[in-house]
Structures are given as structure tokens and as C-alpha cells.
Length: 120
Image 1 (cartoon, rainbow, N blue to C red):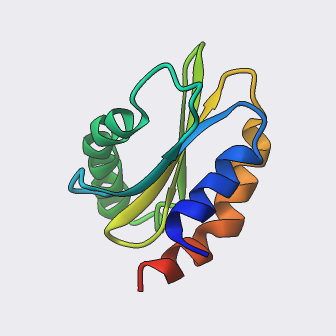
Image 2 (cartoon, rainbow, N blue to C red):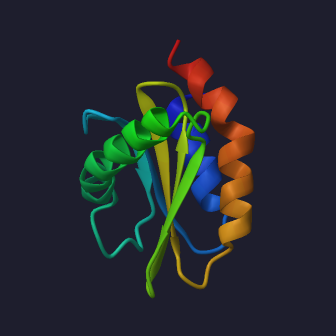
């Protein structure tokens, strides 16, 4: 299965799923899948969050509290789930605020190894 197929599978199997992007902490996207219903640029969202994630990652390292695994950013319209893949990459899943946030978290965690394998 390709990277895009895995991302598509995640998005389409989450009620309210909008899109998913694999991206580097440098803000360079690797691949994405976005539903036609998306009312905003999911890739731009991931690029903007990459700077914030870099700072959070650095803080976690300074505090020596373990490896960063997952972060969520929730607004009244959107739930954004970020799962780290390795030291350089993360995957972002955007879900409508009334979507199935829990299933999104589960599918990201479940599919993280397959996503990493596609990049080897």
C-alpha cells in the first residue's frame, strides 16, 4: 500500500475526516490526502503547525520527559491530531469538530508503522 493510500484509508474511515498530511519538521510536505469537502488548505495548516511542533519537541527534549508521541489542537470547528513518526517526520489528521476524534487517534497510532515503512 502506498503512502497516499494509507492516508486516504485513515481519512475515509474517520467520520468527519477532512485530510491527512505526512510532513517534516522543516515544513516540507511528503504526501497528503484531502477530501473534496475540505473548506481550507490542510497542507498549509500542517506547514503552520510544523513551527509550533518544533518548539514543543524541543521543550520535551529539554525537560527530558520522554519522546513526543501525539499532540492535539482543538478549535470550535476543527480537531487536529498530530502523531510523530520519527525524529524528522509527523502525520497530521484534520477532523471536523463533530467527527470521530477517538477513531482518528486510533487509526493514526495503528497505521504509523505502515507509514514509516513506506518511507524507507
